[in-house]
Length: 368
Image 1 (cartoon, rainbow, N blue to C red):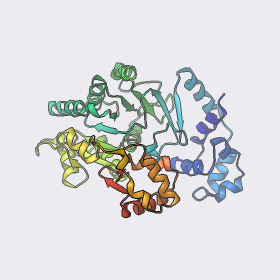
Image 2 (cartoon, helix red, strand yellow; image 1 turned 90 degrees about the vertical axis):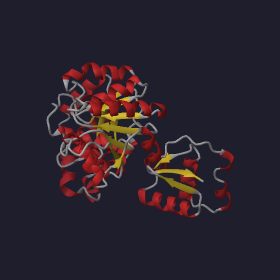
Image 3 (cartoon, rainbow, N blue to C red; image 1 turned 60 degrees about the vertical axis):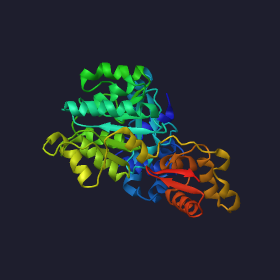
Image 4 (tube, rainbow, N blue to C red; image 1 turned 180 degrees about the horizontal axis):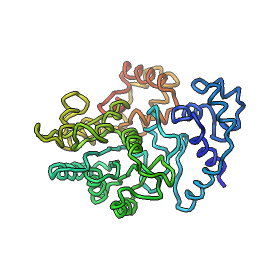
């Protein structure tokens, strides 16, 4: 049996250890096993853990549920993704409440260079359907990963249109991978997997699709995406929660405007009116704002300024990453550099002031 996975699963069961505390512990120790084997005094001294949580870790000894879950994972070839796994959605790590452990089935790259969440009401109008299909088709040239929640309505339309246009698409679930909810979407899930997509959840097998799971699920949809697009929604509901979460994570949010008397566009109009979302009418606007346009550059002349500037160690790390491709998202910089958020921010600011690096919309950076 996979010992490290056993401890990773167990960590999610320890009383008073939530996602935030697990992330703190994962940053302090090389493995989940080391967390459980650390001395209580050492655990107590970690900021945010303290005596109560340290004791909860040390007295935990019921690994039976974790053992059962490993059997399910192995039987159905599920990929578990712990916080420190390189295939864990790296954009999620910048969210304070990123899940401790994810369960994944599929082939889509969760760290694709461009990830867009497309969400909306279950009870869509024909306008919503047409606009979703139009947007996804227009994005097909960008090789974007489309993320949504597998729900009826806009979610399902986004998933279907994505794989029909040769785009990978990932459904984030509010339950375990032993079932599909709604059951009517079983064939949709199979089609998504067949076309190189995936199914992702933080819930274990036998977790029912209870109502309170879906707002929790929505933070993954928002957190793993570069941008969230709200197609149609009332002024309340899951799409509004996801948009608020995306704003809280400093992600770009877009919304399609609707008629002022159409209650199914009331949420979109609210988001636009209150500067919580940018008005969106077509894919070109999204691509432009995110800085995803194809631009021809002369590689040899890209970063000549750096030759005449004394760069610090941190600045050199940032420059080397930016040399790899034309545009790099802040989340990718954060992940690849290994720098703390504050150190990275200082390095980027200095590089901008020296004219070595330019900032683009969508939290993207490039070498001048």
